[in-house]
Length: 300
Length: 197
Image (cartoon, rainbow over all chains, first blue to last red; front, side):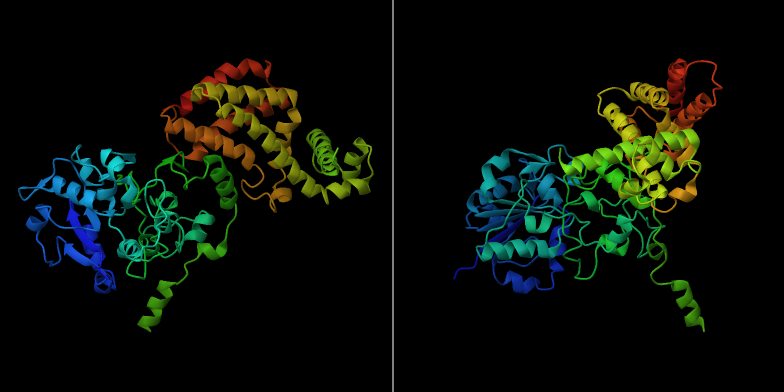
């Protein structure tokens, strides 16, 4: 049986998603299910010059990086190349936040956008390709998000998408789901400083996990951790609003978080948290592991 | 009328009667038999609704907080400036102090003065969240619209509610030389000037 062919092509990109995908523990086993015609960083049978001739057949087009209709790279009309294979392919995967919404690069060039969306608004490519378009926002994407989509396509299984064409399996929950700090969120106990296992990062440290779609705390990074578990706030990198500024500070109005957990009315949130804050949970106020004591043990 | 509705109505009438007696005669001087007597019901029957005087006291503070919170919610839902909302909140607070003085008196003279009764079951904001939540919504909305200055919540809350509570206390002590409505414009102006961006 013929393997589905892939062309991975970049607009304006930092290679972050390509590099992230290289960290997949089963990278080559997954790629062995496909015929990789072109990848900007891997050795393939075809070069970018070959691809730009627009003579190959392609089943899956992976677009990485921000896009504009006048995109020229290495003297080649890359926009026209992407459009050609987008028309030919049976699936288009916008990989990463830049290819999804425009991301970081769109901040500096008004003409840049995602392939089918500019921020949260669909553009003219959307009406052309919406029937085969899949969006995987993330800066970068988790390698297993892409392998999930590729293998589902290879196995001809349906991928349930939301209204912005993101796989529900990956983006149906918020990043908050599965965070090891959830108990601290529930009882409104903030982390003191940075680098501790205890405390929530939502109230003061800028964590956007409760209103960011993604599965960073369900499908762990390197199979072991995530930003929030490690003690860094979620930067909201899968959302069309990415990137924001002041990522380590929570925007508040008189101490009340300006952004609510996804879909939660402010009145409901304030009622619940006002009550939660009224109680002191001693277990959650203590360090889980007292490192100072351990330091003394070592000296002994 | 359904049995449940009837029971809920009876509960509310007990709350309202107890609220008046506690506010008028003080928490410790008011007994369960006093409340039952005012309602023409037996002491035993009253205990069917509230197992103790302390439980009744906690239900009353939740009730008053909800009533006041609902009034402020109506103001919060209006498409008016923060300045106008401040005046509307001051007006509603003083109107309540005149028309239902027991509501405010209970908060000032029972809830704040008998913390031992409320320490178990009414910790922090637990029993007053209906009211506090709406004040938070008001502040949050004002700051996000750029009409109020971003500052510590309690600095703003203390200024606003401490001021109003103090005026109602002075009214209760019959110290104010004028009707409390006389002060609405000046007090609203002062609060707005203290909170504005």
